[in-house]
Image (cartoon, one colour):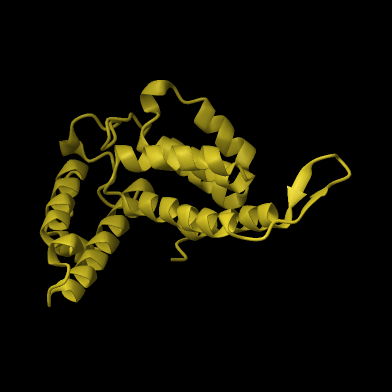
Length: 211
């Protein structure tokens, strides 16, 4: 963990906002687009991978209540997230992630829907998008994931899930669809089934850390 802070050039006691500012500054400095078609392009790509990995490692640790979590005393309001969303010490979102990991989608969805509008920031949209993914509601899931990335465009976890979903839906759209009717009258297709399974794997990769 100490190496992650060193990579971003911040102290482990830094606030969430200070870490985000340091991360953004490094993204601007090493963004691969600045070095396209130059001898430094490969170096920039590797540096960005290192920066993203370090930032995500710190975010994951703080979301799960690790060292110097959201309740850092120097951060002012301990219930205020980095995107202006209020959090009850991170416990609600932590429980929701655990429910999703365990496949308890109804419990996760109930917690999310029960949260007031003032708490529905980037993490809320990301998690409800993941619930909808596992339910096979691809279009609605994509909308929420896009919103999460728009609110917090530098969050590597959000971007990874959104981009994987886009790639999978693009691939499925070009696939061969064979439609049949189930006994319940629901129109299904082999492509729909594969997509639902793929989305379940995608969310599992996200929450379990199999990247």
